[in-house]
Amino acid sequence: MLDSLQDFTASLPDFLQWFGVLLIAAIPFVESYFGSAVGVLVGINPVIAVVAAVIGNVISMLIFVLTAHGVRAKATQGKEAAQLTPRRAKLKERFDRYGVPGVSLLGQLFLPSQITSAAMVSFGAPKNQVILWQIISIILWGVIFGVLATLGVSVFFR
Image (cartoon, rainbow, N blue to C red; front, side, top):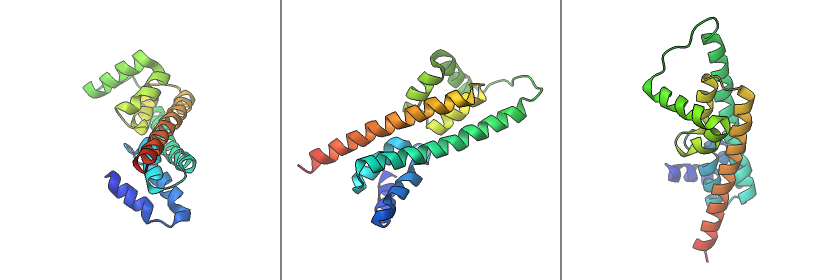
């Protein structure tokens, strides 16, 4: 899959490759981390690759958070909380243990930021707090993978 994303980005004209990185980073499970790496591997300046990947991932995450917030507001209006499925119960347990910062920073090891952020909002976490910590996490993971890809490319070509 990453080869396909890299081929897609490389197939774009040089002046639009950053936009390809932005688009692929909006895809769940690709996110800012793989988007940054793909951008660096295609030959985009690492700073531009990371910034484009972060922006794409943030836009996607915002769509999920705002949608989940709106759905939750309408669904819970005047109703009691519904029974959680086993998978959502496990996610809620982790949310209760680590809070918004912990789930935002570590959640991307297990699930995409779009899913974890929407889940946190659906559990009742403050929308703005989720957005803030998800943006911090997206930037952090994007920078880490961008640096790793840059170092890997540098070592490979020596």
